[in-house]
Length: 220
Picture (cartoon, rainbow, N blue to C red):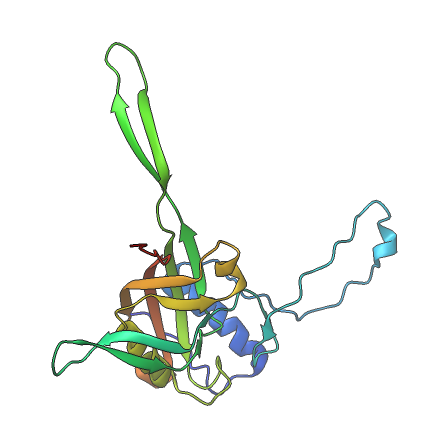
């Protein structure tokens, strides 16, 4: 079991360092957290006339730590299909939109649909290409007490909301540049895992495996 620091009573600066360290310890992710603190450089841009200055894309939002956040995404509000536990039948359920915790890191992969046939008497193979598979998406993040959503939710309350989305037997509408720029507007959750840690720190790691989904209309 990984021992995590108690971030509840830390300063904002130290909280940001702690969150970056937790992501690395649990998921092995090189810190995606940019820390805008430290000594200001004493040189100016004019000192480097050959350097081209490019505009920096504005952040989606800013955390309670004062750290800019890029790549935020939302499970969109809507009516989805789910199972009635008492009857086993599919029923409709109204879901409130959910902003995913800012600690989330999403990874994307997409393979080619391909059949390979070995050729006798030579090297290599004949490849028949039919198209692209769905996007395979892995979302890893941390639910933190009162710090990621700005709504006063505890880590466990955030996990409970995620579990509600896990019960949906439907594709989930999703919005966010990192998804939509890949033409991903709906995802289906295949698996969700929640890693146990000592609850007194209010830090619960979670991981979601999902695939992209596109509506197919059958014309009769």
